[in-house]
Each structure stands twice: as structure tokens, then as C-alpha cells.
Image (cartoon, rainbow, N blue to C red; front, side, top):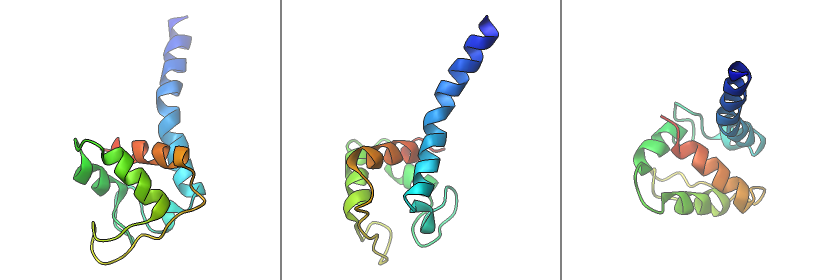
Length: 100
């Protein structure tokens, strides 16, 4: 019985991360970003490190995901992503900010 419970808890903990990585692929975030290296935009892990512990970073970044932005990582602007809903942007940002 405890083996089944452990497996279920493990799946519950790992699903959001996997779902967010899949969401990043589905929403074409990986065209400009990767988890651990800069492409056109910063690596997701670099974003997590830069905004670690900053209050309100999640809301600020979710807004940037949807509306785009510039200046935080150099001169390359991030275009708006109208295909990303607010809920999806929040999910993506939570996943990114939890990367180590």
C-alpha cells in the first residue's frame, strides 16, 4: 500500500514541472529560450536565478510573457505572446522560477 502511495505522490509532484515544460514547447517559448543555455533570450534557469526571492516577480514575468518586454536582458526585445493565456503565463513562470 505504501508503495502505491509513494508512486502517486511522486507523480503528483512531477506532473506540474513536466506539464509546464510541455506547455513551454506548445507555446513556442523554446524557439528563443532553453532551460539551461541562452538562445535568443536568456536561459530559463538564468531567469530563475535573476528573479530568485524578488517579491512580485511572478506577476511581473507573467505580464512579460503575455505582452513582451525589453531591456532586462539587453537590446533584444521579447515579442508579445497573445496565444498564451494569463493562466498559462502564470504556470510557465512558476515552473521557470522553480528551476535550479
